[in-house]
Amino acid sequence: MRYTLNQDSITTIAADCLVVPVWKDGETGDAVEALDEASGGMLRQIAGSGDFRWKPGESHLLHEPAGCAAKRILLLGAGGPAGFDATAAAKVLACGVRKLLDGNIRHAHFALEDIEAVFGGGGGWLAARLAREVETAAYRYAATRASTGPEPVLESLSIPPIGDGPAAALARGEAVGRGMNRARELGNLPGNICTPEYLATYATELAREHDSLSVDVLDEAQMRELGMGCLLSVAAGSVEEARLIVLRHQGGGEEKPVVLLGKGITFDTGGISLKPGLAMDEMKFDMCGAASVLGAMAAAAELRLPVNLIGMVAAAENMPGGRATKPGDIVTSMAGKTVEILNTDAEGRLVLCDALTYAERFDPACVIDIATLTGAAVATFGHEANALLGNDQSLMDELLQCGLACLDRAWQLPLWDEYQKQLDSNFADMANIGGKRAGTITAACFLSRYAEAFPWAHLDIAGSAWLADGARKGATGRPVPLLMEFLLARADQS
Image (tube, rainbow, N blue to C red; front, side, top):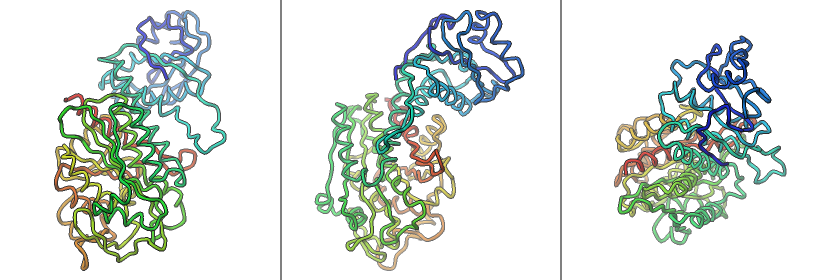
């Protein structure tokens, strides 16, 4: 997609389609007023006819409008201007993008000035969000399908030069959208294609694409040398070997790096603690944390962010088998702590704990792990919020604010010492599960014991990483927007 700025008078823009908002009850802004005057009053007549309420989602397409260089005008419902916030703006932009992609439209102009006039979030936010919506709406999964239906024909989109740095904002939104699509594609791939080795190859190819990226991949022999007994215990029953992937983006001089760590369980049967068969196909999405890290790393490299960033992926397949780890087995982590495996389906924390210990060698500014970790997070938040826990309140506050800014929101849960006792074991330093209650919290308690050397935050994305219903079934690309908002904020401060 090509994004440009166009400051010409809206009546002279020779696009295939102009997209202009109409407010509730037919109120119009400057863009519509200019077009209305050129067309002899036709637009205001339609807007105020009472045939439309102009709620978000409503639209009316005009062909060959008089007095206008464009071939079409799309009147787009924008709801009420009073209290028009980021959530409302995102809905309107997404609706307009869908209408454009559904039509036979190659070149479009989105008249954002009327929205900017009432929106308190700034023109840069609108430009970035629009580009992100275009990229994600155009995504089609095609890797294992003979046909995906007609491809969108939209080739270019222009906007007026609103706000500060609109061109940079468009580039940011495009990169975030592309990063989300990378994460969606990896998440949507089946487990027989997207294996730990596939993720390692993907990261290696990503490093070839971008000069700022370099990659190291640890195999099982190297992990065994390092004493990563927890991570290796998860892969023990599978023919697919585990991989620890370390992708570096060097953009911030001598600054300490931010480490993003993704859970990469490429398929999770539950191991010997076998999951129920119903909907087990969705366990290909258990590597969406890893996918979000790779998507964010690609976006950061594309934007050449002036930060030092390390993306880690702890990748394994959790399968039953003759050599699989059994409930009651005790394994030793890289940190030297012993863990009693009471449930082999609580495997994400096992691959992450060794990776957290490995991350100490980078002397990180902070570590954020991202994992589809617990069903309890889904029960608590549904598909809306990312669960957030950690050991550094300033880091968590930063993530909470970034989530609000990009609408990929998180909600903090407590990580109180009182929950730690649920991990007590009679036979090891700790158990890998904490009982039936507070599952999201006790999973984070387990991880916290391996994150004492640095500021750390944990995002449980089990509810936000994919949707399971009908035509919408598939990976969402979250929390790439949240991670990128965090990294962009840090880049702006550098």
